[in-house]
Structure formats: structure tokens, C-alpha cells
Image 1 (cartoon, rainbow, N blue to C red):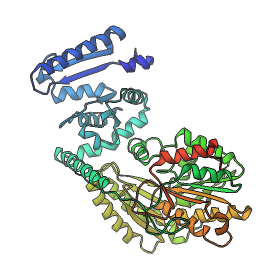
Image 2: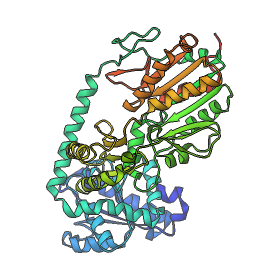
Image 3: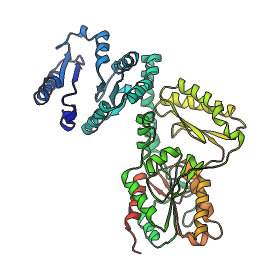
Image 4: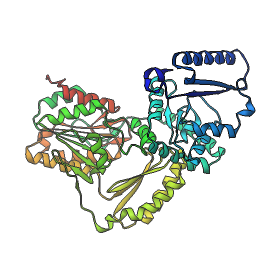
Length: 501
């Protein structure tokens, strides 16, 4: 009803077939719900026509024997979208049947699933919705109906092999492991401890808990300075990490780029880059093409992709690649067969290749099996790539195995940026913010360079290194709880708040 109200173009083009299957429990609640459903269907028909919705109950409107597999598959063959918005669901195989039917018949289709049903965790090509958020459900339905055939086919293909090769027992195992993982996460959250300082600088003492960042104090210092360097991470720093992972789960195979920073962050970056006193760098593990798609329209912004392997200076249109050895240049030919083999074995896993490395991601896979496969892949790649001048590491928190050319890290980029900016005119303010292990190289390098002769005196009380979120220890001086606080800081600097001493 809401879809046809908010999106009038579907009123003459869309039919909903709602099939309800009783839970088998007789009583007033079941009868009342049935009556309410029929009143709703009647209201929609009166408003938008009799063909807008067809409401059927198995056992009442159609015989249970007619809701057999052959008849279901015949229906699935002609429908463009399969929708399940259950608040809770048991062993529901209908989405699997839909994927199988559409793929075998070489027809396009989209599965839209409630995030609260078990099969949504294994059908990674489906579109996930929160049934309690009506606006979100309607938006995703419109997106599914408007989706181009290529993306529909890609989403079905993502799940077809899993549906063909795995049994109901496999799916139940995934559900049990999900429950165990949630319990483990809750226990970990309750036992989290403050982040400890790795190095001493200013008022921060090594081994002691890091203080929270005072945004207003930083803003006052910022306004008093005339040569500023700002170094920022991207995922987890400018964008909430949970949103990045959710976007990758739903769209990484189909849109060709990762989640862009929110408009407020882009607006703040434009304002900071427009200030001639500022030099601003965003350093990320993403590809160069991805970063240009998300932030290429910001004048004066310098970017480093793939942890600094590729760099784009402000007011330049050409990415510069760092030099590699002959052995390093052939890393992909050696690694690809091994990575592809493990990708085929692990439903939900996917690969993101870059110029300097690859990410084998298993956020969508069964958690325990994904970690097991990741450990096996890490060992296999290290054996395969021995002597090739590359490093292989497994990052369970990110849910991925990383292959990268050795000695490529954010620290080298940050150090070069500080030296280059200082050589033009001495720096009197440095702000560096990051959230994960890759950013620790950047935070460490900035602190080391700021300690050097010629910078130490000018940057005393004017160096701000910040880590986002909780961790065991960090090279930063201060902490902020999440990327929303980073955005608040950038908006404060952009708007000039906190300028008064």
C-alpha cells in the first residue's frame, strides 16, 4: 500500500500475490490476524484496483495439496521479486526454491528478505530489509523492481552454487554458529577495557589509558595556526565501519565501488581543502578508481589508495605508483589460482583485486567456516608467495585475508606528506585520525616525524593523533568513540566553532 502510494509509476504495472501459511495454531489471534489481512487487501484493491493485490491463505483459499512444489516453482518462474518480511521465521526453503527456479530457467529475479529470517544470512545475493522500518522496506522494494537485469542475474548467480551444493543441515549449522558468535560478541563487549598508549607524547604516558579528545580545545588550537596538515583514514574514520561492511555485503558485487562518505563529511572536506592554510590527505586501502568515484570531485584534496601504493596529489589528475621489484610485479599470477580455489569453496567469500594486492573477504560467509578457510588460505599463500616480496596477513576483525606488496603502508605516505608540507613552509599544526591496524602505521609515523629536530618545538601541544573506537593499545594521543565524533570535529573546524581562546 505504501509502495503504490509513494511510487505512483508502479500502480498500473505491479501485482502483489500474498500467500499466507498458517502456523497450525488455532485460536483467536490467528483468526484476528487473518481478518485484518483481508481488510488490508480489500482496502488496497479499492484504492488501486482489484489486480493490485491477490491475498490467499493456504488451507482456506487454496487447498494445502495445491501448494505443492511444482505449483510453487511455476509461480516463482513468472514473478520478478520474492518478498519475505517475517519478524521471525523457521525452516523456510521458499527463497532457495525461487533462486533455483529463476537461475535454471535463465530468468532474472530478486530476493528481498527480512534480516530476521535465517536464510538471509546465507543468501548473500538477496536484498536485506528491516521489516520494522516501513520506509526502508518500500525503498528497497522500489530498488528491486527497478534493478537492471545484469544486477539481478549477478545476485542470483551469487547464491545459485550454494543452493545446489548445500543441504538443510548446512544452513542450520550456520544459524547455530551465528547464535554462538552473537553471544561471544556480547561477552567481549562487556569485558572491553580502555585503550592504552603505546608511546609518550605531551601529556600522554606510555602504558596509560588514552584520554578522550577535547574537540573544542583542538578547534581553538586549529584557529591559532597558519600551516596545517590533516591526515585522515576513510573506512571506519569518515564512514562508520558497520555501514561499510553492510554495504559490502549487499552491493560489493554489483555497484563496482564501496560506500561513499556521508554528504556532511564531503562538505567538510571541501571547506577544509578550500582553506589555503590547510593541506589535506585521505589515505585508504581502497582502489584508486573507488576513491575517485567517492571523492574525486573535491578540489585540493590529496589521496592515497591501496595504503599508499598509488598517490594522487592535489590539483593533479594522474595517479603515481611506487616502484616495485621484478619479483613483486608477478605476485598476482602466483596468488590468483590459490585465492580463486578458496573462493569457490567458501560460499559468501569474494575477492577484491588491486594493483598492489588483494583482499579475500569472508564477511558474508559462515563465521567459523570463514575463519577456518581464511587460516588455511593464509598458510597456502605464504607458502606459494615465499620470496616474492609480498606479505600475507589474516585480519579476523575485518573478516579478510590481505595479500600486499611488502613495505606498503600508510606510515610511509604520512611521513612523506609531513616532510613535503614542512619543506614548503614550517608546519605548526598536525591532525591525524585513523581507526584500525593499518592506520597505526600512520599514527606512529606522524608521532616519530613530529619528534624530529625542527618539528618538535613547533608542534609541541599542536600535534593531535586520534584513534577511532576501542582497541587494546594505540600510537595515538587521544580517542574518539566512533566516526560520528570525527564528523562532529570536522564540522566544528569547518564552521569555525571553538575559535575563541
